[in-house]
Amino acid sequence: MPRTEAGARLDLPTRLRIRLARARRWEFWPGWLFYLPVIGWIVLLGLRHRHFTAFTAANPGFDNGSVVGERKSVALLALQARHPQHLPLTRKLPAATPAALAAVDALAAQQGWPLVLKPDIGQRGRGVAIVHGREEAAAYLRQARFTVLAQAYAAGAEYGVFVMRKPGRAELEISSIVHKVLPTLVGDGVRTLGALILADARARLIAPQLYARHAQSLDTVPEAGERVQLVELGAHCRGAEFRSAMELDSPALLATMQQIADAVPGFAFGRIDLRCPDAEALRAGRELAVLEINGVTSEPAHYYQPGTPLRRAWAGFCAHWSRAFALGREQLREPGVRAIAPLRLLALFREDLRRFDACEAAAGAARAARARGTAAVPGAEAHNRPRAA
Image 1 (tube, rainbow, N blue to C red):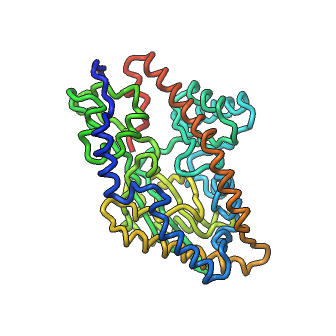
Image 2: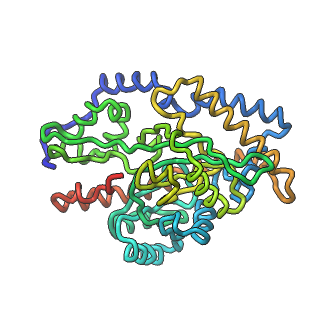
Image 3: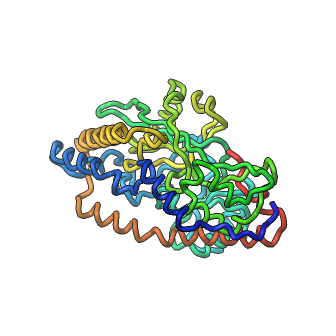
């Protein structure tokens, strides 16, 4: 991928046109704006159920009801203990950096690079890094001021399957399946990466984010036919495109989801993010690699498919919260199950916001280490990209 001398940057007119295009598509609205009517519905549900935080009891086996600040390791390590075939090998790292790096080395020796490092407490891809070697892992761990999970890298197509139990029943149902598409461009040997981003209808909408992420590569010219993966993580806020995959629902998939959910004590409502070889593998419920098990505040993400009418999305999200309240209210009848008090819940959200900078600093350190390595080794940039999903 040769480098040109042209300084590809976004000018003001381009930024304004992008903002206008994003404003026309609700999937790119700020979360607070989209959620305004949903929050109103949540308040009404609280009045109806006479309990404003009943939804926090939906997953009694998780920290804080899986609403905010829950440890990923609780669910993942429980699944690994009972059904390791459904999970890329995952390790909870020691707190001290030297011991943590030694544990990463051991995992890499067993599974190979790349590996995934992520905070034990986090959401929406915050602080997640795909590390391609020891130097990147060391940079991440030096910055980490939190408990870190190391996970073998799972290739394949990425999906999110939302499952829930109806009140009083052990059987699951699937309410949402989303295909998380990682945007990829194909070089033509002529245009720079920056120009290719602006020429692609989808990538253009997230160009400010992509320009910041690929700042060191914007002026390079991908070879003709060379595939450039722009985003590594299957999070919408990180640039992934969400497409509805509800047509993949099947008895076989539900049976596998039931097996996974049953392995995690106290899990009844949430989204299971996973990778698998292809759509047919998901439909058949086979070769599934679970990345994370998310709780109440994960979303029925198939509504984010481009072109979904706003009113339909609002209706779907309101129905989603109605189910969370109903399940939580049912769970509160069980001995020992408690909901989180409203003021305590607010404090937990504030505490979670304070984690953001520390998590992003660790992931940024890993990216910086990769950039230094690719700059020093000609041709390493293409070699170090994640394997195509």
